[in-house]
Length: 360
Ligand code: GTP
Ligand code: IMP
Ligand code: MG
Image (tube, rainbow, N blue to C red):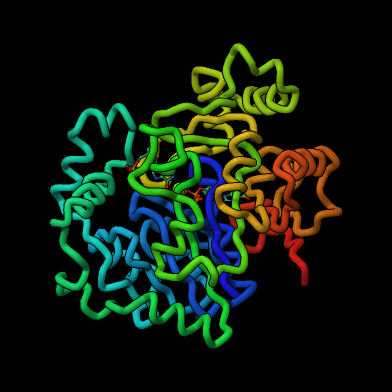
């Protein structure tokens, strides 16, 4: 069984947390990381400890899973080696020998080129310039970096043979649909497509091998960096959203006032980037984008994260029937808008804070 987990909005939907739950629950033989590279930051909590992961798959929390990074993913060797030692996964993490390498010159270009830095608002991690060099066919590959030698593998061979033996494989994508180079809000996008098909390409499996595509959305829509956020909440429109008016009131009652309505909501909801610590912009759940991204991703199921941030009474709830009526109504609005039933709901940052409604 092959499952791809991908982001349905602008990244930071909570894919890392969902993958950590699925890894612990389903114990996949392999968890493989797809996506652009160390521009992504997944934050997970396991057994009370916090991990911010830019290279290592979040599925590391299940100790019996082999961990892989596919050839499509850009590697920053320093970040990779540091995370391997921090997570204690030596011996069960492998990277494809054809992964391309981010060097200092790529990071310098990403942070000094004013269009990338200020126009697009990139993460500054060097991914865009590295993918440009990869397309120019002059980039260095993992197989030529001595420090990476112990980790090199043929990831497609490993993953396809695991699938042939009937094992479970979980593919963890990064970023989100709205950031896709092909389908997102160009030019305010990342340097590659971000859909489920690309995740399969990143790891080296064909489309016929994929059984499930789970698209993850946050209970509301956020965006970090520049580019349109159609449902963005502002001074002018907040009164049109009774739910958000209430959230703003809760924030102010707690003494939070970060300037604008949107900044105050971001501060209250704790929406800050994992990689860059930039404040994320907050929008109402963007149903149009969600529906379109479910279509292009070929979603077979959807997951909703951070339900507790919008409805604090749902914090750490693990049964659907224990959710508040207003939270259930929110879930139903998303389900009927997208036309797909929700199969996982996340109600807190810890892997165990999850409502699982998949067929048993
Ligand atoms: P990208 O690959 O960067 O797109 O990241 P991501 O989708 O893995 O999400 P990221 O970890 O960057 O951001 C999600 C944030 O929400 C993290 O800080 C998580 O700890 C937190 N989080 C995830 N799910 C929940 C949840 O259900 N409730 C709460 N309160 N926090 C959550
Ligand atoms: P880059 O991928 O660093 O080139 O950044 C391009 C755009 O994608 C910027 O708006 C970033 O903020 C955004 N972006 C890239 N990776 C992520 C991610 O993992 N989560 C959220 N936004 C991201
Ligand atoms: Mg993130």
